[in-house]
Image (cartoon, rainbow, N blue to C red; front, side):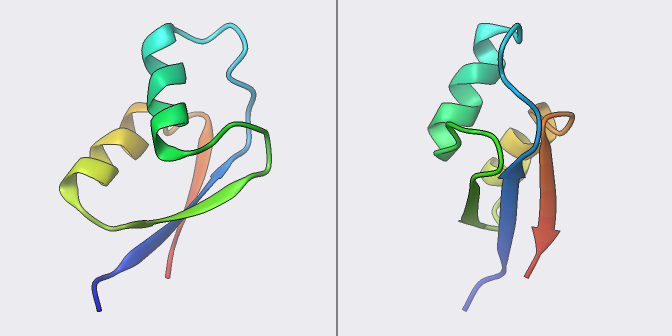
Length: 60
């Protein structure tokens, strides 16, 4: 089984650039304090790095 990461939205996307909003919606984060699990791939890491100031990441 591949590694998983837990991503939690901790700051609002209000007032953020549209690119950041699209990234968050693409990951499935819509409301503050929602948590999702993603496979630890280079593409998901790239999305997390782009919005790292809005999310908290935990490795499983």
